Amino acid sequence: MAKILEAQKRLFKNVFVCKSCNAKIRADPQKILKGKVKCRKCKRKAFRPLRKK
Image (tube, rainbow, N blue to C red):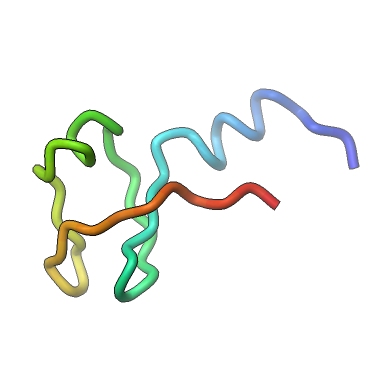
């Protein structure tokens, strides 16, 4: 499968996954690191980056 740079940026840039409920959230990485973003479902602040397959 060919890797298209524009598509990868659209799918994976600034996308994080909640560690407890696996909800996807698009947010600024600096806000994630500072703990200013909460999950919409479970209200926790633990996120990980979306894995690229």
